Image (cartoon, rainbow, N blue to C red; front, side):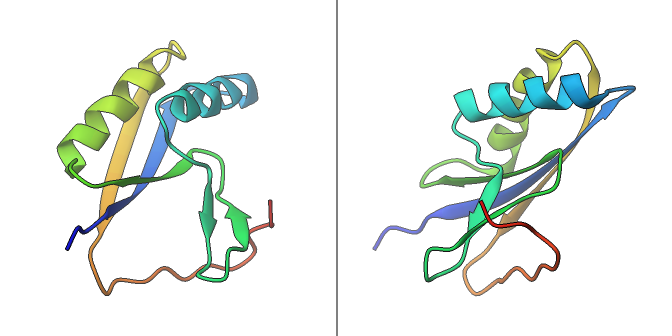
Amino acid sequence: MTFINKFIIRIELWGGGATDYRHLKEYMEQEGFLQTVSTPNGCAYRLPTGEFYAESIRQQPDYIRRVAREAAYRTGRHPAILVTRLDSGDSMSWEGLLTG
């Protein structure tokens, strides 16, 4: 049986503005990160600015953080990064996210 690691990544760009976060989104998407989460029935919700979601069979939080750091540095801003792995049985709860 193969288990998929799921991650939530939060990136704060110190001194960053809207343009920096637009570029961050582009760079993160190029690395395979999503700015949406989906429910089991397939409805997708947009995460807040600077929040991303990733799935990987092999990778661990340190690797995800390194890839996110490289994408964030491409904006020219210094990032603060938090990576959280959701283990089997963990769940997410949200409110106010828009579909998309």
